[in-house]
Amino acid sequence: EPVLTVIAPLMDAQLIETAILAQINHQSLIATKTQRIIQSAQGRPVSDFGARRAHNIDAAVYGARAAYIGGVNSTSTVMAAKMFNIPVNGTMAHSWIMCHKDEYTAFKHFVEIYPQNSILLIDTYDVMTSGLPNAIKVAKEVLEPQGKRLKGVRIDSGDLAYLSKEARKVLDAAGLTDCKIVASNSLDEFTIRSILDQGGCIDSFGVGERLITARSEPVFGAVYKLAAIKENGKFIPKIKVSDTVEKITNPGRKHLWRIYDKRGYAVADLLTLEDEIPDLTKEYTFIDPNKPWKHKSFVGCTMRQMLETVMIDGKRIKPSPSLDEIREYVKRQLEHEIWPEEQRFENPHHHFLDMSPAYYNMKIELLEEAHKHEQ
Image (tube, rainbow, N blue to C red):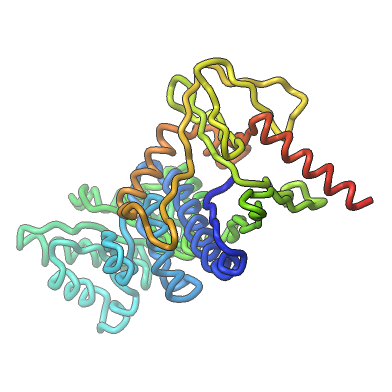
């Protein structure tokens, strides 16, 4: 279905193809991957830790922007925080610890600099026999005499489910029940879900390479295709035909409508001809292009037009929404409009894309015309 419609002289439209696809594909990919990770975290905060694994600087910065749209609470990419006003968050580096004479001294110096916001990295040498005991010692000897508390510890390697459970027991026994445990090692939606299923005591996650590169599925498949050409003042629909069904384009100038049931959930998206306005005040018959032989209709539904004009003659005609407005729009759709069954990790329901009878017939006529040329 159309995400963006460009009406321009052919050469102008061709020139911007790569730029448009690079923006939409990359950021949609990262936002989508992020949302899956957010769902797997089950309400726990997630921070973007991915800059060092991103595919160049722009990918890190705009990936952080997309991750914020997708639901992360913060980013460790300071440039993105500065450019887009994203909350910035981080802990400490292994190099900080390694450049001190010992781990305790490294922790002590760190909390002296950041007494209000100390999260100590405890896996540089050994989590249970070195990192955790030294973190507790610093909490007791340095922070508590100042009336401060250790905010958290971070585990960046090893068996995160096991280590977090053991660390939680030790922290609680030491009276540090409010000390959070942060995990940040090779995480994605599947590993996070596994850790939590095993009872891992993780309070928040810092997710790096598998978020910023969408490692498990690193391609987002939006395409940019010619749909119509203007001849004698009228747009003539054009179609690309392929033996791969998914590569057959939806031709012509068109409108896209989202159809809602009485509860406000989106039951489908609907393609119509440009001059069509569906009448949903009565039963509306449509075509499912995957099952055109079935008689289907919308009853008691409402609709919203998904495409709106934002530029005319190269100039914006309405202000661009803020990043927080975009983030909230995504959140609202996923929580209140899109069926939970469509958001499952395994065997998700498809989001239906239906067609008005007039639009479907126009597409079939073009396919039949193309078939005649083949012969």
